[in-house]
Amino acid sequence: MLEDMDRRIVGALQVEGRASWRRIAEVLGEAERTVSRRGTLLLESGVVVVAGWHTPGAASIISVRSTPQTLKITASALARRPDTTFAYTLTGPVDCVTEIRTAPGALPALLYDDLPGTPGLVAMSTLPVMKYFRTGFQWQPDLISAEQVAALREFQPPPQSPDDPVTPLSSDDRAIVRALATDGRMSYDRLGRTVGVSEATARRRVEALRRAGTLTIRAVVEPQQLGLPVEAVMWIKASPGDVDTIGDALLSHSSVRYAAAIMGEYQVIADIILPSRQALHEFVTRSPALARARAVDTTLVITALKRSGVLAADLRSARAAPD
Image (cartoon, rainbow, N blue to C red; front, top):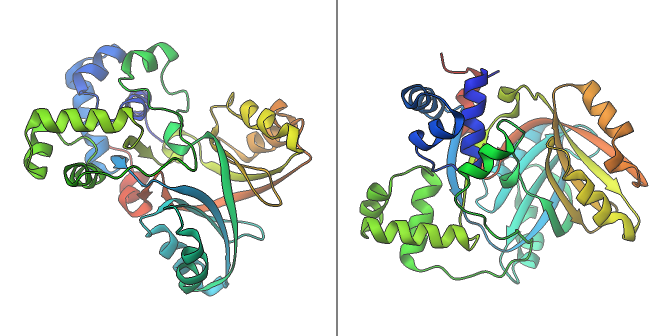
């Protein structure tokens, strides 16, 4: 688990992944040299990955069953898809769950032609997302104060919708998105040289893409490094009039990493991260957010192969914190 200073640096990067070490140090009230050294170690060790994300289109939760012998192969194949946001293996009747974004009109081909060819897949269920209450990109587990969050935040992107219209990108914008997908903290000077535009143009385009919500810069870290080793997916049944009430109530809990209204047998899905199974039990049985739920099925996350668009392989060294 990370030390307090490192957790606060992670919290700052989750708010503003491109913030300079000087700016982060000012907001945290720490020495710039210390913040720069520790922050650089976090990034170079792979404990934290800061990357850009752009995959527009309608969102669907895909729950998958496979054979025990092929579960890792199936889940890994889903995680490696560029259109998946997250991919988890689970306890219970669903072996793997993932979120996939599809361009307009592409869902039939995905379901009939593409996904059935996934190695080891036995059965799948498609649950279209109707509304986001919180996405993984928005998750901030109270590592820094609300005042520090406000001081750091440079962009307030519009709320994400699962069916936001797909806005065509220029060739320069596509190149910028690709470059930032590999390094979300790449300097504007280097980004401009990589893309073949001026530093000023690179800065202007990145800011425009972020304000429009087309480009998201996020810092991804394994929750266990933050002292939150227990992760679960909750499948919540609710009456139609209670769906938004439950979803909005879930937002009051910083432990809820992701929550969305979905179609199908369950009306709300939530990804929750907590310090212990006892804390999970108390949340499921006592949380006011679930008081109006008709039923809650809880499945533990065994392995997160991808979260917020970042493959687990890129966070592999997160098992050991920097000195």
